[in-house]
Image 1 (cartoon, rainbow, N blue to C red):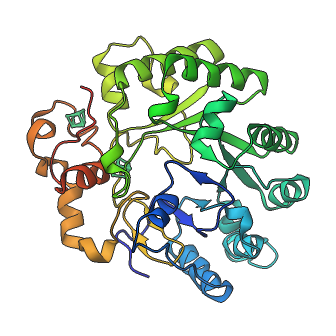
Image 2 (image 1 turned 180 degrees about the horizontal axis):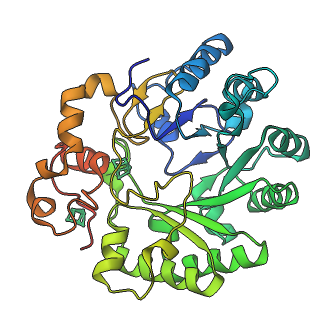
Length: 346
Ligand code: SF4
Ligand code: SF4
């Protein structure tokens, strides 16, 4: 298995491209719509078992399982069994059994049986809910029904396996009305944490990309965090620099808590410090990278990781070492790994 560090911080594994939805921001959905670009084949059950064993050898701190829709893979719990064997079957490595595993799901096909299985394996869920407003939600997550997502949240709460909800920031869901609606929804269903995921255009959606008004969005996020006492994680490298620059009177440690997507002690870009695995087994230095570690090359990745190699606005920025800008978004939008992040609001 080719990877960069002896120990990636975490592994983000998309185990399938199969999905019962067609979300606007999904890389697999958009690829399937582009002529000539086929969705990659996924690994068979034997191959995923081999990969799971190799992931265990890497010893990441935690594992994210996503897709597609992970619950559509019939061998999902066999994969989890390998990643998280019982103490009895693996007495020499009890750590494997305690290592956190999170599943990212839309909740569409979730039910009590699956909840029980997750509970038994100690697996937590991150349910994607990109809007608390039914019409917006169903516009973004094509084929989904808002009530199914709420039902999944209620089941996950009942079994105490809900880690958080994921909210991908995009044109349709970044108004103040939308951000405040999701805050209110967390109160209604006693949800404790939201991961706001910054929009990372892929090669198929880049031409339609609209840069959000981050200053307004971040202010709304801070406001709902205060109002509802939420754990908030914002997956944008310039979020913390924005907090510092805006002189928000909150300790950064209170603003963000440790979570499976954000690495608490590294506010900036963690390109290449974790690995993303495609459903066909391709290994990438970031979940949104259009190309693999092998295609980019280890030397180039090392250069990209050194924030002092940035150009333009990032190179002169006082927050360079804390942030560094999103490398993948920059590459997709400018064709240059080292340019400054075109989304930077500072
Ligand atoms: S200029 Fe670059 S390093 Fe500075 S905050 Fe913006 S994205 Fe981050
Ligand atoms: S390139 Fe960096 S900031 Fe962008 S998504 Fe990847 S890890 Fe996050």
